[in-house]
Length: 203
Image (cartoon, rainbow, N blue to C red; front, side, top):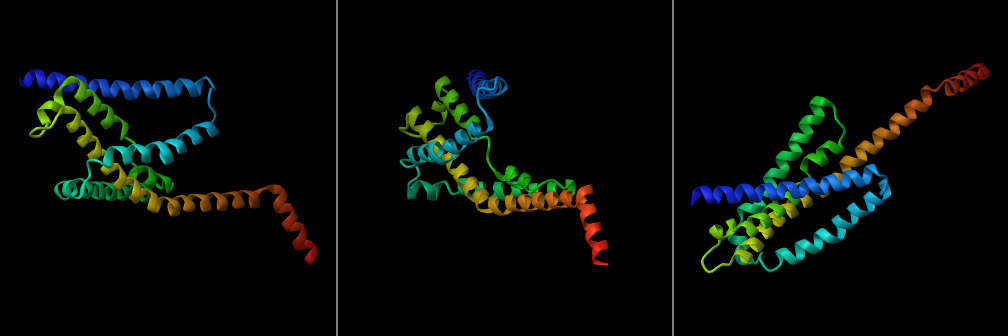
């Protein structure tokens, strides 16, 4: 029984991983062929973040995350909070040690792996592994919905914290870029000649 469940779990994990890799491969090939440009990628990303993800969260989490369930599943938002804080601290550490840009802190704290757990759950549901995790009188589909709501709850906590601190961090990068551009302009030979000419004329 344990061997069969291990095989089913392995196949489910493999199916979810292959799904993510195929999606990434299609995106890479589309970009290589020049079928989309940077502006299109930005618009699609914005659409997914501002429309599709909130709709998924509202539909998936609404029926599951009642006040009773949240009182019983307090560990999920707690872990989302702690993991995000730890991730941002690692980003700060990387910046102080390796002198990276501030967007690294944002990237360290932003969850980018939501698709893989959700696809993995779908695979485990299709292979029958989730039946062993179902509660009393709970079907596999209900278990799948509950598991998805927990993953999305963790994503909401992480995204909320990251989006609160991201603007100020990205603004630091923008200010550094502006300062670097100003220094480059000042270092140009033409600019130096103009400054020297003004000094000579003032004398």
